[in-house]
Amino acid sequence: MTRLTRRYRFAASHRLHAPGLTDEVNRELYGKCNNPWGHGHNYVVEISVTGAVEPKSGQLLNVTALDDVVHREVLNDFDHRDLNRDIAAFHDVVPTSENVAVEIRRRLATAWPAGFPELAGVRLWETKRNIFELTHEEQ
Image 1 (cartoon, rainbow, N blue to C red):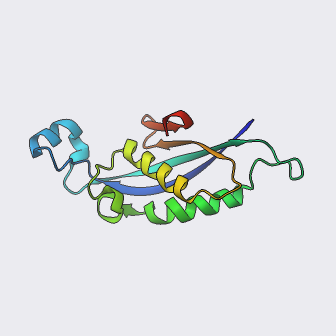
Image 2: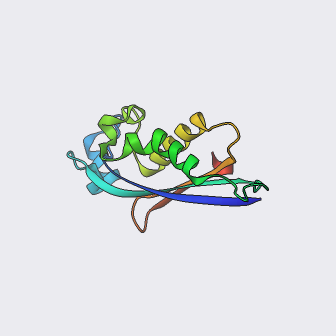
């Protein structure tokens, strides 16, 4: 079994604010991330696949094919966007990095091409200190 991880970047803004909570509770829960005008991050997302190396090509997966899927399903929609306003999945869900990682995983799983190795993980770096990971078992 071989694992391939490919790294991508996107910039996006968001505001952490749960509509079912009071403004005071949101400020306490999310602190500066509850700023009414939002704030941005330069996210890094790592997509991992696992499987057997194809004997003829010597590759687990042609990385250009993986790039095409990730760009089409995630980066084209997320890069330079306001996640709260521009991404339908976050109209009713707080776009925490945990939820952003889940949405990235959902989008990829929905569009995952037949014949691709198994989607093994999604790791989202919000900052150098805040990293969120969905492994195969957690997805």
